[in-house]
Figure 1 (cartoon, rainbow, N blue to C red):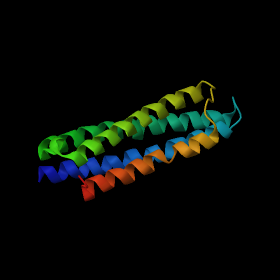
Figure 2 (figure 1 turned 45 degrees about the horizontal axis):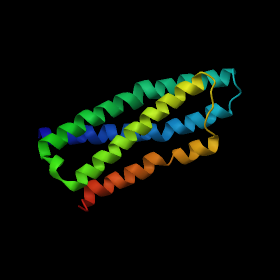
Figure 3 (figure 1 turned 180 degrees about the vertical axis):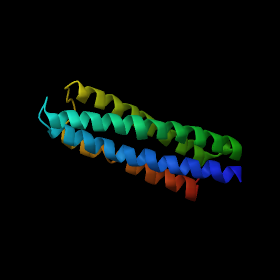
Length: 141
């Protein structure tokens, strides 16, 4: 019974985290299109901060807590599919960190990445999620 609750918690927070990772680059695109110093830009900065602090970061932390608990209780550490999944989750966590850092640059008025590049980066969570689902369900190795 406890296993089912841990797995449910993991999946719930994965959904929250990935949804936030889909939204954040889109917010940044809209933010970059706003005039520097405008009220609209200030609203985007506030929205981005709330998304990061209320949804994204807490969800990522809980994904890690529940996920590591599941890995420990199921003995997944010895399975090849898990190693690949773990690597992808590390990449997603790094992507999360990069996106948080990028938002702080935007809030300071820096715009180092184009809107087109952000649109391409917006695909990272979807691709990683698809690969992770395949690894967990199919367990190809």
